Image: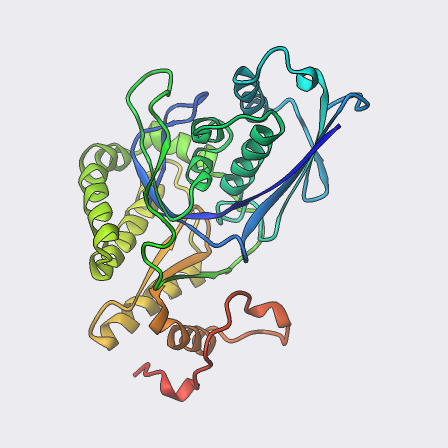
Length: 341
């Protein structure tokens, strides 16, 4: 019997992945860039038991039994096994896989990215595989390939038809920009109405804006974002992050029929961030939204306390739940110290 437990982080894209050129291999139509968050607060955890006593392979996600005949799960398992020594004794043994997220699933917070990255990493450890496994994680969930690495990560779209050059590479390690912080504002933790998979498929089929974005906007924006990250140029980084988020959701509206991922609270957060930055006379915080209503705010450590105070003032807790705020402890700031005039 072999037992392995792995933990994988969430990544939050600042240049978005939206649209595939190959649905089976999950090959994107453009590059994307993300930051990998700390494992301490948002992660997926997967435990795998490999044993000759198991009569079949089973997979549980957050306590619920999942079908193991899904194409993406089987693709990951097949590609991992291709790298295994065929004489390995336990290659034919069945698996018991238990995976869980400590944050909302299918709510636009990259749960599938963390989940498949964790699954593929755990499988690689079970079968004693080394090397870059990001291209295999990609076959489970595109963004999962970025969660294989820490720090700042670029998923290269690649050009080959077999996807061999579509993989993730690290732009900068997690130690590169230690002042950077991310606030995740959970607007709605329910499963979203429009799945990312079906939404981006419809976008590829119907959105002319998506084609323009992939061909004419993202290549240059990616170069500028990499430069901003390497130079720790927050002003440029923040502008590009918000512009790309806005354009991504414009593509969703240009899709026919349209995909609505943002809600009224999401739009209120966008307005608030722009108002706050204008009030401060400089860009202090940047928002980005994936395919869901929940906001991710990028900001520097020195501004965290004030921004949290502002968020609490504008969106006060509706209950006294102790889990309203989770994460690193930050210095408290009085509401009257936050200028919202």
